[in-house]
Length: 207
Image (cartoon, rainbow, N blue to C red; front, side):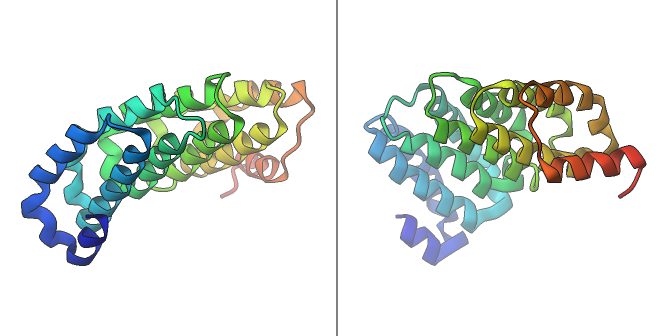
């Protein structure tokens, strides 16, 4: 089906209500099937672009539920959901108030495998290049600061990379959060040249 959608593109439109019903019906059958379903959802999103958002409302609770309850050992469904959010791009903008808190909980959860936490952090940085996240800045920056205070160096670097992406979007508004992040950086004497460069420019009022 995903391959067919990629071929016929927007001509799939008339069949979408039936396809969405089937996806919802089979969603909970198995984690491997969820991965396949998400490939189809991505194909539909790419084919319909902005029109896809009307169908997203029926799928989003299922997708967010995967991030909350994924018990599979390799976390493939969760990784696929995070990837799908990037494919949706601006189509998902009006649902960010639902999406961002769940992604944040995914990287804050201590029991999660490190690779999934990193993927969640990276996803927020990539979303910020497609969607305006200014309204969620505090809900993102404070949890990232807590990651920087943690003991995982890879996650610290990922958090700082994502903060760099947010700085590009927030501009001078980021300065409100600087003290919190600096305190976290001081804990492990963490350095990140790109972050320091961007913050330096902000403080000097440069572009």
